[in-house]
Amino acid sequence: FFMLGAANCATFASNAADFQRYAQKKNDVILGNIFGFPVANLIVAAVGNLVCASSELIFGELVWNPVTLLDNLQTAEYTAANRAGCFFIAGCFAYCCIFSSIFENSLPAGNDIAALFPKYITVRRGFFVCAVISFAINPWFLLGSASVFVSFLSSYQTFLSAITGVLLVNYYLIGRGRIHIPDAFTSIKSGAYYYTHGWNIRAYVAYIIGIIPNFYGFLNNMGVSAPIGVTRYYYFAYWVGLALSAFTFWVTCKIWPPPIMEEKWVEPRDYVRPEEDGNAQVIEAVTMPGNVDMKGPDEKVAMKV
Image 1: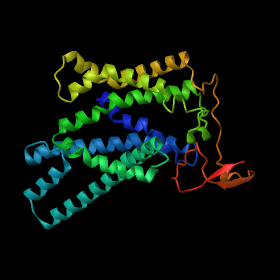
Image 2: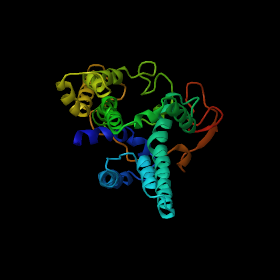
Image 3: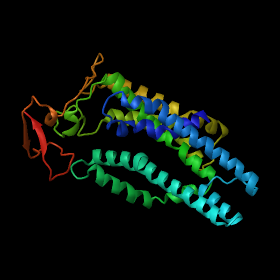
Image 4: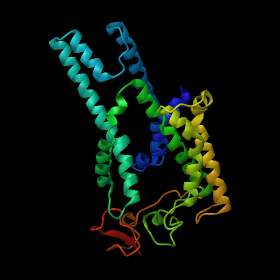
């Protein structure tokens, strides 16, 4: 269960920066990560298990789907008080679904899609792209049974563990805390993050190698027959994928050093945007060729001179 919980949290570990970037101070995210997220998940899991267990005493079967549970409550006793209670409970579920979809799905997807095509797609446009794709993959089939739903959640680890390994090594061992922010928003070839025509081959090699050992277990989790050893090995897939991708990325960077590779910790204390620096002369100019406008092609950006 501990391994399954780690796999379920893999998406938050790999997309943490999508939320933390809005923090006013560096320490603002500490309490939320230590207490907010674990405690909230513990409460939801505990209440869910208690309600599911009590459904067997009331209806004679385990009901894990909240929608089915509310329907059974009204079928058993169709009174005004019961209907009102189900209405407010359903309203809370609707609010939670909308809230979680925005912050857990739309926001990370919007940031990632905008990062892929910043010249044409803003974060807001990325939200709509995510919404269209979400309907296209028919996610309601994942709710067919509890086993299918849990299997889908645990499959995250196959792909996200390898991403997390690359991110950790890149920040703590390769860049040593250094992120050259201006180069993150430019497409010029001399930029620190241009790599090979915009592709960091080292990261992709490490990512693929981190996935390969766990892919058979992923197929088995989706219904493909596999030996019992593969099933048991898959319990540790998250940590195996993370360690393997991290080690591979570190080795490839040692053999083929990237533009930014520091020997000591150089994390800057703060970064002030040019338009917020009172001592800097700020002018407005149309984005020059080679620069990427993250706000859209029709907007202007501030440049520091």
